[in-house]
Amino acid sequence: MTTTKNLLLWLAFLCVFTACSDKEEDPAPEETTTAAAGLDYFPTTAGSTWSYEGDLTYSYKSLGTKKVINGKSYTEFEQNQNGTISTIYVFKEAGSYTLYTAVAGVGNIELTVLKENEPEGGSWSTTTVINGLTTRYTYTLVKKGLTKTVLGKEYKNVIQVKLATVVLFQGMEIPFDQPFNYYFAKGVGQIMSELGSSGTVSLKSYTIK
Image (cartoon, rainbow, N blue to C red; front, top):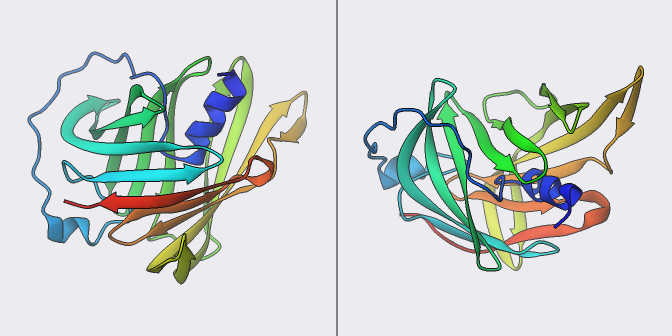
């Protein structure tokens, strides 16, 4: 798979491909109750699973184990894309959800993909260097409290987030494709990704433990 496709799957959401190589102390697993998971826009309870279909097809499972990366305690997830197993990490704090992974051909990436307490229209950005190019990711919380139907299933309490990615080069801002839109349902997680010219990925099934 090309570097661009690797990056696209990461941006499609739950980062992907190879596990990060940080060797830091791993704390004991922390227990998260099902009741608490029902309040999250990205549940991390051990054994929870999500399966996606569309222009990209993959599945995820929360292992529930913890790993300290950059001083933060992340929850470990296993990703399966057509039989290829890799690892991603999710950090939650005060309504913010950050993903961390190593993307093949790109390197380590850490992005805050959702801030549920941000007001509608609020935005946040991360700037990083990918393959020698400075890249800025700007997320905007478009709408809260949506009801959205995905593959015939209705989800309530949905947040829509828009991602605009630009490469900064010689004083210019070069867009990476069209803006992407992500939809997160409370107590479920991400239910849909609209990836501009690259199509759509939809939640096919899930189990929250």
